[in-house]
Amino acid sequence: MGKSQKGDGASEAGKPGAGKSESSPAAAGESAGTNNGVAHVSRRLGFLFENPLRASVIQALCRESLCCSDLAKRIGGTTTTDNIPYHINLLVEWDCVRVVGEEIRRGKTVKIYGLKRGLNFSKEIWNSSNEAEKHRFMGGIIEGATTDVVVAHRSEVFEDHPESMCAWIPMDTDEEGWRQLTALAASSQREAERIQQESSARLADGGAPLSAVFTLFSHLMPDASESAAVRRQVASALKANDGSSSPKAQENESESESGPG
Image (tube, rainbow, N blue to C red; front, side):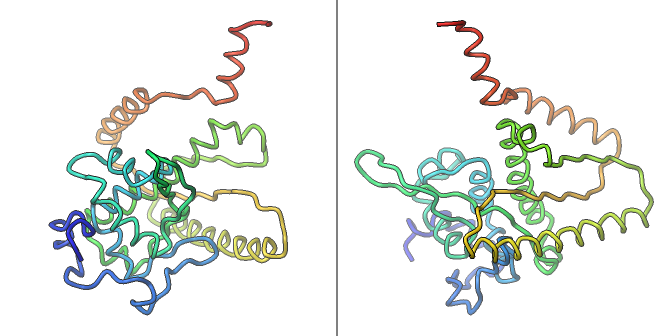
């Protein structure tokens, strides 16, 4: 396989399983692991997310759908358009990324890629990963989950559908309470997957689809001083990228400023 296909060849050599063929699902004797719309990442799929460039591709596609050249621009650094297709093709083969459309660019048709929502890393993958890999795994999930929430908020989905739910419950708990919280999150995930499976069956019979998201986080927090410092950094970053007005609100503001015709 040529270097232009391999892309960041040097970084590939250092990943777990280096020297093994990055084969398609059929060649590996294993399916992509999708189950009821949630992509379960098997042990053999772990290497897909251990590569820093692939992790960057996943995080970029969490924010928006992009073509290969736009992905290279978003990721920046030494990444070029030649680096991207190899990794995109692997992610498509393993059912983590899909083609969501096409555009004409300079007389040529280019594919636009989007991330398939729902990444759930198995315990086997998590326990066998190092700290840097775990950080990248969580980064991809957090980017996707928070982007979906912000998109829904700015599109006024919560106002239009009051049955929607948004809860944030900081608490002090003991070890037993923490174990109960993680068990609750795990059982809630299983129940959500059951609902998805039953919904898929009804949709196959001609039901009308609704694009919904069920997001779960249960986690501990750092000590107060570290938490405060990180909060200041996050607040500063959010302020720099503030666009809190929803599209509908911006439209109403524009109409009120223009006044009657």
